[in-house]
Every structure is written in structure tokens, then in C-alpha cells.
Amino acid sequence: MGKGKDIDVFLRMNFLYQVMHKTIAKLPENLGLLYYYGFTLQMISQRTTSKLDHNIKSSICKRCSVLLYPGLTSIVRLKRKRSKHRVVTCLLCGTRKRFLCRPDYQVWYDKPGT
Image (cartoon, rainbow, N blue to C red):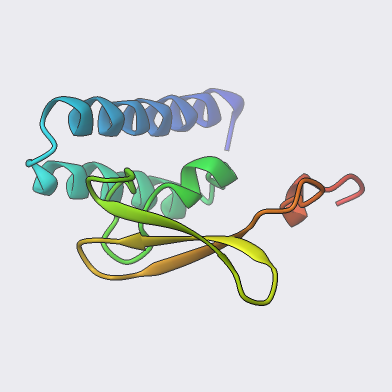
């Protein structure tokens, strides 16, 4: 893929993510539109083999592709069973995501040397 196509893909994914945030702020009851934008964003990422940023990927439900917005489409809880972590539960499909809450924690591809 050339540089021009990479920039185009990045701009499309960025636009879809911003539209998802604007849609949930103005029309929170229109979940079908949110699903469509999220699904399109994930399909563009898969078909072009472009990785989504960790923050974007963690804010979209893996099963139903809806933006996980606390209070509207998700519930966020802090737990301390094994180690301190944040549990995000999607209110539409019930999928749960766990994220460690350590200050020194880094995603593996953000670590230096990888």
C-alpha cells in the first residue's frame, strides 16, 4: 500500500470514530446507526490490515461494534480481585472487557523495542 492510501484509510477511520462520538451525544437512542459506524470502522481496519489505536479499540464493543459510552451503552466498574482492573460491560450484548489499572502498564506494541 502506498502512503496516500494509508492516509486515506486513517482519515476514514478517524472520521467514523468522531461521527460515533457525535451521534451518541446527539442521538443516544439511535443504536442502529452507532452499530453501523462501529462495524464499518472495524471492517476497514481488518480489510486494510491497519491496526486500531488501543484507546479506540478499547472503546468499541468487540461483539456488537457499539461505542462503549459509560452510562448509555456500558457500565464501568473497578474491581480488585487478582489485581486492580477496570471492567467495562456492554449493556446491549453483555460482553465484558478487562483493563489493568497500573500506572506502569503498557500495551505490548507500545513498549520500546517491539
